[in-house]
Every structure is written in structure tokens, then in C-alpha cells.
Length: 201
Image (tube, rainbow, N blue to C red; front, top):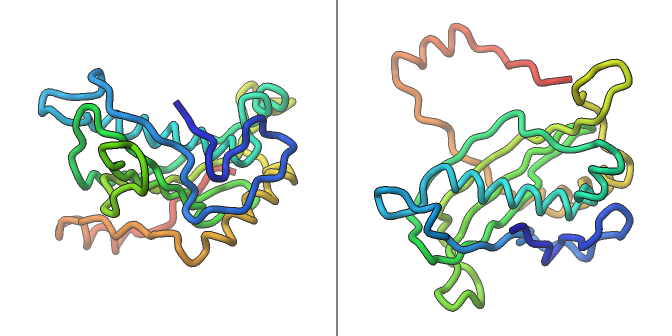
């Protein structure tokens, strides 16, 4: 269900991506009956599924498609995620996900996806108000000679170059999610115990 238009690649691995669209528009889908809950709209779990498919499409655009993953054993793992549910969506509605790379280092990406409703015809520009948005930290992993499970490791040079190119184009437009609501009784606790959680290495 992932798409590759407007910045994605068909085969990945070697071709240089075309001119960068800001934001990337890599994935479209429609709400199917199996995704609708007892309230009559898209169940919260399927927002996550749709954003996951958008991440798959981003991997294709970076050259980390299925063929690359099979050949190298490398992939991306989500190690931190936040999602905001903003509007309801109903069966049959078309959706588009817009994607930004908000930052990166040698091993990690900060990705923002925003979900938008498409016009009823499925053509033209998607609606301006986001339905949901998520912010993800994605970690580059690959096989290790001395450990059974994939380990964090730097991106390969070609993938890293594509990431840097897209991140530079998105630098001034990538949205930042607002701060979480924190109950008053937790605010004092967080101030007293605040420390940065370690990231995988």
C-alpha cells in the first residue's frame, strides 16, 4: 500500500532521487471497512498503520527498499514515537501523508508525518487541516558479526547523502509538535528528576 510518487524510487539502491518535494508526498490510501471502529470512524491503531506505510515509502525514497534490505540486512527501527489525533476520518475517505525529515545524525532520523484528507474525487490537493501527525525517531540498524540481533550502526554513504539532501531541503518547513500536556503533580516531579534518556548506540 506504500507509494513512491514525488520523491520515492521504484527500485532503490542506486538511482539518485528527483528534485525534492517539500513536504514529500509518498503515500496515499483509503479507509477500508476493516479499519473502522465501533464509533464509526478510523480506529486509532490504523492511524499508526498508515503512518507506518508512509515510513516504508520514505525508506524506498532513501534507497532502503525491500531489495536493499534483503541484500544488506539493514533497516530502520522506530525507537521513539509520538502521535496526535486531531480529526475523525470515515470509511471510504481518501488520505495522503506528507513527510518531512526534520533532522538526522549518522545513525538516526527525526521524521514528521502529517495525515491529510483528500478531496472526494481523490484528485487535486489534499485538505489543509491535518487529521493526525506523528513524530518518529528512526534508528539505522544492521547485522552484527558477534551478536544475534541487529545493532545500531551508521547509515551507508549513499543513504546518508540522500538523507542529508532531503533534510537540508526540509530544514525551514518541518513542523514541530507542541509540548505534551503535563498534570501539575507531574511537573514538579519532572523538574526534580529531569535527565535526558539515553538513546541506543
